[in-house]
Image (cartoon, rainbow, N blue to C red):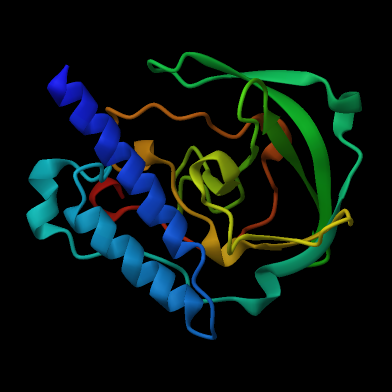
Length: 212
């Protein structure tokens, strides 16, 4: 029981420290965010990097910042009238039920793109946006990446909200890998086919070198 309680405290600390990185401000916020993630991944007990690999860990890999992938758009009516979607994590969390909260529509490289934003059903709620794109399996993790997950505090820089408005700003420079990208002992909800983009999103985190 004591060991379990300790893990729970470490997880709470991991989420708090991760959330703090998304509250950074200033022109160098992206670089601070990247350096902060490297420190957490290298040293924190809840790091998804396998413990045996941490002494040799030299940092995560990212694309160069791309201001064009900082996109202002609207969260429009969801596909399917907000009907639910079950995503199997393949692990202890089992199947998680999501509700389609809305659809982000934007242009990238002249191509019309759509991504569904999901709301996690049940107590606590939260907004979640997983996606795949044309780089998946080549330059980025094959199963896709996350843009934000508000339950886990990974949204303060990647999702900017305007109170009382459906207008949002999303920043793909903060796209990041799910934990299963670093160690297959993790199980993660992955992007459903409706969030597979045909265009490359060359921003954010790239594939982890030890699994490349």
